[in-house]
Image 1 (cartoon, rainbow, N blue to C red):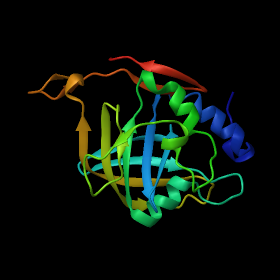
Image 2 (cartoon, helix red, strand yellow):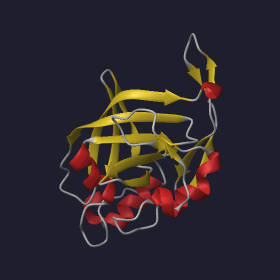
Image 3 (tube, rainbow, N blue to C red):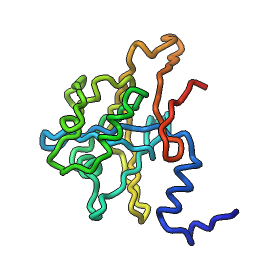
Image 4 (cartoon, one colour):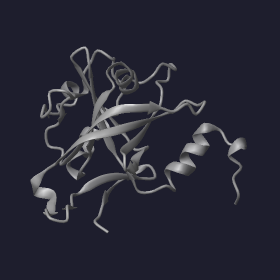
Length: 189
């Protein structure tokens, strides 16, 4: 069946894309503004370029129409840390997807330990095996409810335990991703 996206509502388009562009890695985006740590999961995320190193994450709006806290914080501070979720994070991912008041920290609410490894950036999730320290490069205007952000990778943390070959920079970890509406362990290919 050929679907004409101009005749589908946003929810129908989302379902078709989310269930066919798979697997999708999950970025746990950590921002901080006014000493409040915001942690939010995004599965509309991926690598865009290696040279320059750029990641893309698409952030929607709250039901009220106002920007989500992650988007507001990135606009204000221009910095974030993207932590890749692994299989041990599933329950915490679900918890951080809850809509909280902007003055309430997901780190506290969901009991997620964070740690600062670079004072110039928000903290990272303490047990994340991969984290990218990013600065906002550009916000794209798609005339929609979702705002894609291009993020320059300035630094990256990789847990020594997941580096299988230091000379060739081979990495393996039990990443958690989205396959349609479900979570799945992304196996090494």
